[in-house]
Image (cartoon, rainbow, N blue to C red; front, side, top):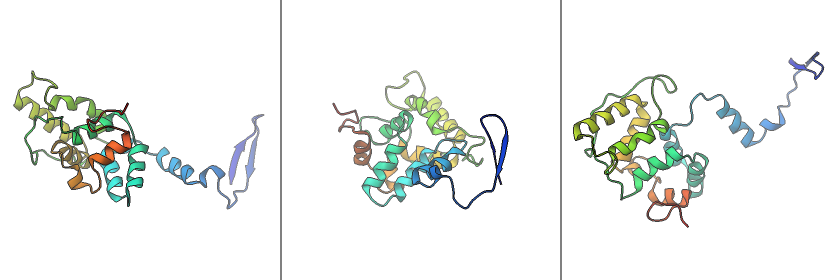
Amino acid sequence: MIIRRNPDGSIIEEQATQQSHPALTTRRGMAAMAESGRAVPPLFSEIATKINNAKDKPKKLKVLQEHDSVPLRQVLKGAFDPNIEWLLPDGDVPYTANDAPVGTEHTLLQQEAKRLYLFTKGGDNSLSSTKRQTLFIQMLEGLCAEEAEFLVAVVNKKVNNKYKGFTANLVKDAFDWDDNFMKKD
């Protein structure tokens, strides 16, 4: 049973039919409905997993371009630009993973991306090495476990090792960047 309101305010009851709404029959309509109930934007680790699972380069490019945002570009620039030097120790980071369910008690890398300058050479020279490492561990512990793992891969510049096909050339092609990871003229 479908209940609708007429422009004059009266109510009409209609029998539901097997035919679905025409806007939902397209792939785009179904994708829009799938995303509409989501409380949080896609996690960067989810985007990386989609890229990993995509079968060929055009599909990988499409995933990146669909999820294009300034924070994603910042994180990926840090992951692949050889001119960005992270002032953090290489390898595993001693932190406690946040096991709260996605969308509840954790921060998002999309929001934390603006603070990543604190951990790069030339970002904030007033921080001591110990303070910088402590802030980074606190950031990781605030993120959900998957995004924290993704961020550690970014800092270690090993995104391609964890997510196959997620390369510097893919990122440059997706965002139309040159070899210096800047927008082409």
